[in-house]
Image (cartoon, rainbow, N blue to C red; front, top):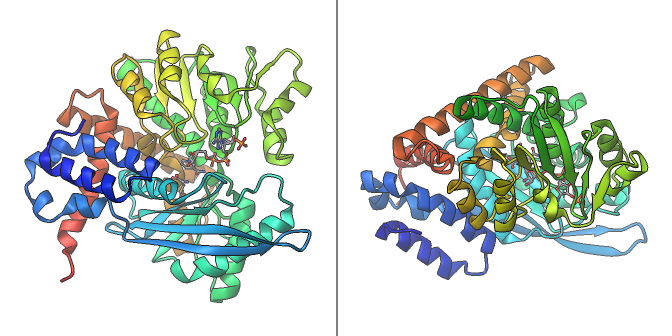
Length: 449
Ligand code: NDP
Ligand code: 2IT
């Protein structure tokens, strides 16, 4: 519910203009609702049109990506790069390759990225991109040809001081490698224009682990501060089995927890003795297979062919690490009913607005993705620093900085939440803290006329 007239007008005009962009409007509404107390205290925000500017990307690039499949046939996909906000640094954010990608999805991700990057305390603006290309079932050569064709268009819009892409769903080291190679051929320069690169050519150690590890560092700090407890001996459910999920599981296990369920888009596995992460890595990272194959290794595990039902598995801590809107009201109610004490988002906007409402009205600790999953992009920021310095830090050095950043984000979000609400609403804390820095930068930079 939005009450303030100015905020309401901004949101209503956006709804008229982009009525078909469901995910984007959802992300904007969630942020605007929490900004009301800030807007009411500072009339300059309305006078300078800060909110109108904040919800409109600086630039939205859409392009055709034609590529040749293994049979010699030409295929066509749509490519996107949304350069959302550059007030506090070059556009920064991942690329997603998934058939569900469209303008709404890319805009919601770019919008959220702006606030997330601000929370890291590093100098990074917000951006996101991708394509509706589906890497599943494609040969390595098809993926390479697609990445090269994608980069043939994108290269003119990016640069180490302009816009620095990275990975997201469907884009890992393999894809970043192919895209970086093509960028280098076209631009004839070797610069840190991508993050999440393989370590052989400038990638940072611990970037692969960073989002999942960062999620657990944030959650551990939240548990200690607000519930006087830790991951130790807790039962954890993690959705997804990609980059974020795997390394969230690894860190949770290192911190003494037992991960009992994980999923992919087809279904979830439940292993009451604790999931064997080496097997998940073998299936997902090496074979690029399906999570169901876990049953070939452990006969006493169970597989349920409905990924949404994973939230009915009783747990102490839930970490949604797959995709947007994967956790709905029913899932949220099941978690609350089963006595779950904390939900921390590794994915971007995994909880529907109805699910968030359930969490905020319960005793569950709820950490919104733009705060709790910021470890990935924060470590991308560290990769940019290392590339500029022409130095590479050790795994432990990067990991230590990551932990420090995540604990600082928690403190900032918690303190901001105490200042503007009851200290429990970390959604408000994250949105306001992320907003204020970008807002001040925009004010100081003026508008061109
Ligand atoms: P991956 O491609 O490595 O893994 C994605 C996982 O989510 C897979 O298990 C996939 O299952 C599942 N998934 C994807 N789409 C759906 C869907 N529509 N329904 C159900 N499950 C789905 O991606 P990441 O791990 O990198 O990203 C996961 C989430 O984390 C995303 O929301 C991303 O934006 C966010 N994130 C990622 C960061 C990073 O550094 N990589 C940083 C911060 C946030 P399947 O294999 O069946 O498709
Ligand atoms: O959503 C995200 O923060 C990411 N996919 C990581 C972005 C990045 O630039 O590392």
